[in-house]
Length: 519
Image 1 (cartoon, rainbow, N blue to C red):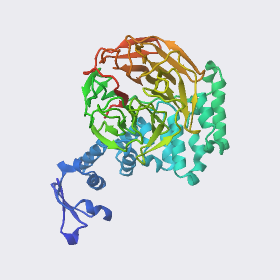
Image 2 (image 1 turned 90 degrees about the horizontal axis):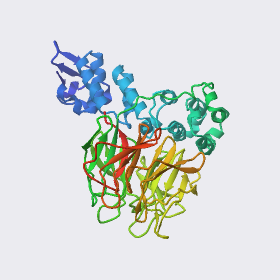
Image 3 (image 1 turned 90 degrees about the vertical axis):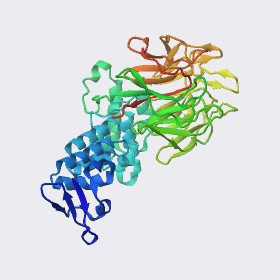
């Protein structure tokens, strides 16, 4: 079947060739004529997104089901955090039920990244309420929902602040940590200005005051746990030192229990910061074998492709990187001559970096993590005192200040840091020549550290990530050689288990993160 444009003086008419009889189309909106000005074979539909958006409504009106199906299949293949809401709206408009359901499920499963998009910020109030009320949202914490609400309202504050009560009705505040409620929610101006929002906050605080056995009696939509469909996950290991800086990137499929290679870095990189944000993996700074760098590369798992984004303001290697409130933070590190206390943040929407308050201590080889809306910088090395550090400090973005918290029991530079079940883990590291296999965990509610089971082997400069209720430690070095092994910690049993499948390359100083497996 083909759609053929007629001569210029009848350019509003199109002829469908290949049916039992000829059909003349006079159905396309004037603004859509520009997309169809030549012969377009149906077999090539998947190459032209804009043309598909023209053909799909026409195919629906003419009951050309094969054409409509092809259009929907292509749009489904293009689902991404930045466009899924638009595709969902388009599918709804043209009664493409299957595409609508798949786009909606995609938005729920990728909620944390979807809310960073312009499409989310431009949604209407009914659409936002519908999305955030879903039990199927895949989120690491209810913080994601609260921060999404605040971002949406602030996008057009004068008009939208009147909707705060309606929105907060769907935020499950009782499921948030008490510290986050006090330090973030209670201090939010939009909450303070709404009596209904303050009532929801009081409800949440009452929930936390109740004994555990009585909480089940306090039933409301806001105390109900969300029950998302778990997406398959991949662990991505980027670059590293083996023994020199490398470009290699490999992924571990948790379901298939195997490793596979993906697109290499554009250039050699080790000692970089690594985060997963807005559906992309960011490799931040690091060392290329000759220089400490300011460059930042992003990896799109769907396209299996790397591209560059804005450079940091400062050169940094052995830095920490984390995501807080939709911003990517680069913390401390080493610039080639001195350890750094400076911290900068990246706004993905403006593609710009800006400095925030510096830490109280210079920290290279620092580990970072986010718990309860606070950014923690753990241990590291202070070049001024020439000592590995046991000190820890946390950053409050609202106050733009760093505060010391309880110290670890031991000095740790090059420790792996991960967050699991709202607890902060410091894994391995070293104090001078002594490489550790000990692990300790920080509980923000009591401001205390405690020891948990040792790893099976000593590791420093290893990558750490949490997935499926387990804490994974990847590679690193034991003081004499780089490691290809991976092990995971189960907090329920307080035991470490070595994964049977090793990386293809032993590497330390690699970036490690967990992503959703591309559909």
